[in-house]
Image (cartoon, rainbow, N blue to C red; front, side, top):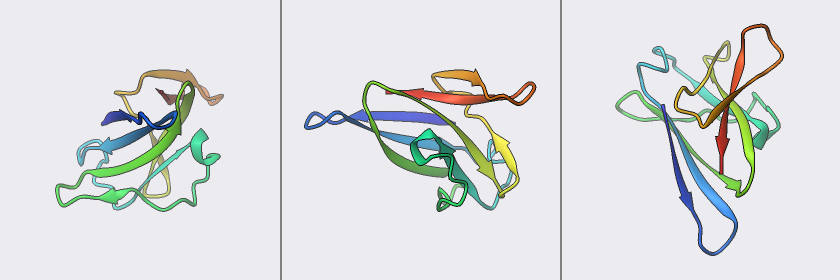
Length: 102
């Protein structure tokens, strides 16, 4: 898993590329990026699956904010990004959300 941040000079936006390796995706057929930036909508389109088995998606995020997110594997299993900027409890016992700061 990795997060790549590209800040735009023309406006206060950061293009964040979320990447989930094939090992981290646990052989999932489908992975969705779900978080505060899309109102936790788990009906969003899946991330793009690469030939390598990795999943990737780029999202434009407003600079100066923190966004909680998780990956939804095969519509049933939640996974965190262990290369996230931070983690916060999500209200479920022993469960955290990943955080990206831009």
